[in-house]
Image (cartoon, rainbow, N blue to C red):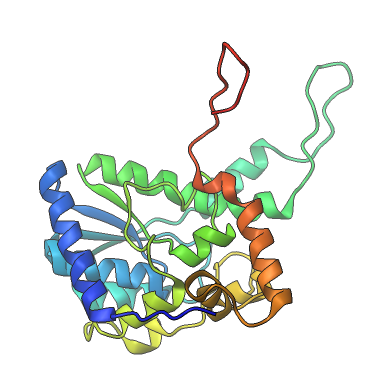
Length: 261
């Protein structure tokens, strides 16, 4: 096990400075963020509000039909004083299901049947949210802020072409544990939302229940070289390997050799 120290205040200030530098370099001053009411989107919104001014941060709440904790999302926006909108993706999700229903196609018409997949259905939400956020960001000449953290990215707890799609991944260098630490240095954020048990808002389970490991264990694996439990480390390592494709650009096949690059 290695040693690792983390200065949450220094990390916060570096990220704020980084947002400002990126804004100046790329010529934007507005950002759009999907607000879930959890720690990641809350910390992202707070950092951007400090960097760019609260009037330039647009929080979008996107329930899939009904979101039981949507009041937490609204509270984040109110606490920070950022601009907000609600876009319910439920009707779009239902329309997609209807368009790809599970009925057997007519014999001989050349169409194939699409079997129902619970995992595919769960991932529809993040992809529809990304499309919604892209639409809004482009309409407002704003940048889309990614809210995923390093822990989620490394174990593949993210949706390809969903929450992995953004203009800059603000928390991509912070583990879940470190995001909480940074959030707790920002008095404008309600402490209970920073420390709220993370859930995906789709499956009805906590993130850790779905992952089968804790965020502290992932943090220790990434920062210290191991969690102290060989079985857990093996499980995390397997997730890191299996999800490598989510952290890479699409494979390009070389037309001269057929090799992937």
